[in-house]
Length: 290
Image 1: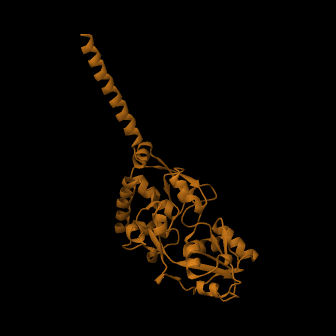
Image 2 (image 1 turned 45 degrees about the vertical axis):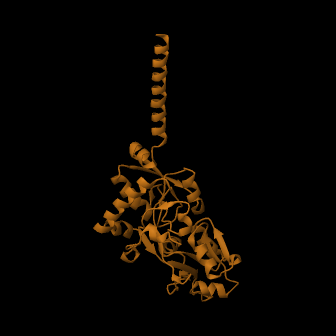
Image 3 (image 1 turned 60 degrees about the horizontal axis):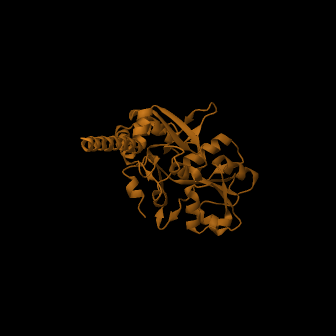
């Protein structure tokens, strides 16, 4: 009788441990998507880059990437968004370290970045642009012109794709000045620390409009760089951790609906984007290939 009772107690104890283990495992295995849907809140990393993601003077988080993500997240049941301001070069490390749940910074999809994180499908495509002193005294109209004149210095934001473009064209790293953000690039040009600043078209236009300084001008006949035999055009998207497949897939489904209805263009047009900046049929998978 005692043996039978001891056996029964042992069985009950094993069942109890299994139940606890199952509960603990279930909690551990909850995905980011499940967590944010349950709480209705999400944190997003951004780099304060107009027009992609930035805070207004009254502290409101907005921008092309933010508003696209906000619309989709609300439809997925996540109504509250909190921004975490981070230098551009620290966004991917911050995402991987769980400082935030998504990156909404208009980040370009590249094969190198795709080794560390996963991208949603692109929400825009865009070309490069440069600004110089008014009158373009050094006649800089392409990256090749910078390469040919070793005295020319160009400022780009830390972690931005422009650094890769410049070095692949053959421009010396000694000619490249790294700055923490785009307003700092404008300051470097105004002060004469650099001769050129480089960024994407909408970003450049936005910082020049904000500066409202006649001593600088955008090079309107800038020649788009050719890298590895291809004309450079960047595609930007929301960024996810690599184990958040369910979140990314749900996000992509809503994004596709917005593309088809024309709502995507309506949202991004408020930030200076046009039909020419729509991503077309490009996908994150195709853009992540070496």
